[in-house]
Image 1 (cartoon, rainbow, N blue to C red):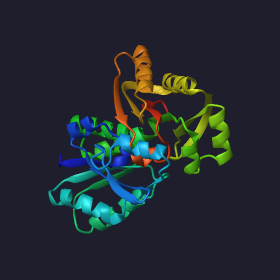
Image 2: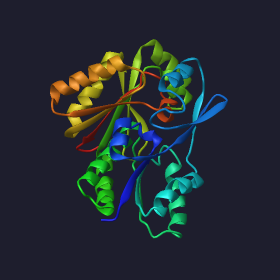
Image 3: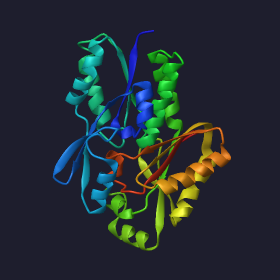
Amino acid sequence: MNKYIIATDSTCDLNIDIINKYDIKVIPMSINLNEMSFEHYPDFRNYSCEKFFEELDKGAIATTSQITPQKYLDFFTPYLKEGYDILYICFSSALSSTYNSSLIARNQLEEDFDNKIYIVDSLCASGGEGLLVNLACINKENNFDIEENYKKIESLKLKINHYFTVDDLMHLKRGGRISGTSAIIGNALKIKPILCVNNEGKLINIHKAHGRKSSLNFLLNKIEENIEDTSNIFVTHAMCSKDVEFICENILKKYPDTNITVSDCGPVVGAHTGKNLLCVFFVGKTR
């Protein structure tokens, strides 16, 4: 079996322990925060999670920049020169143009190298993308060659369920997800939207819960309704550890043998949600 690396982008919001365990290669994404910019890595080396959401709370505007083809060329080339094939699992093409940039880079690299470069449009975001990457790493550990792994991940990606809730609707308003009037009225009525990522990889609103506790219980109900593989459940959050404790305790009551991986939401997703985002990700019967 030819040696290969598993790579992804920093939108995956993967727990750093998993990245280190499997030696996952992560290409950073650029964040613009007011008049400054920084490269985001899953270990938050350039800007802390706490500081980022604190700045958003103060009214800072954060935007993201797509990964350019040149950045992919610079990222992939050293591994190809070392003789590695590449399995790259990318942020949903429906939410970013980075996937198209990666294809442009691959087409150019295939003219110079004989190595295989497999690119998966995950149609996932945040910890859903991270869960898919984690499953690819488990496959590799179980001696899947790169083509087998690629085919398996392609068959699994539309089973990755994403359910999440936010606390402050104004961040969704800034991202164009809801109108300003809806955000103001919703906040006043303590409406907490439930969103998911659909089969097209798009972010959609599927439910309006009344109050935070109701929104968290809705997430738990969706797990029970849809879950197929209880071995791994990912929970990603933005500065709401008490809610994470509630979610994890209730998951373990129902599925005591599951492995729950908790991670911090990074700024790529957090720029559009604000703090108190809470997400659950799992392999379901369907998405």
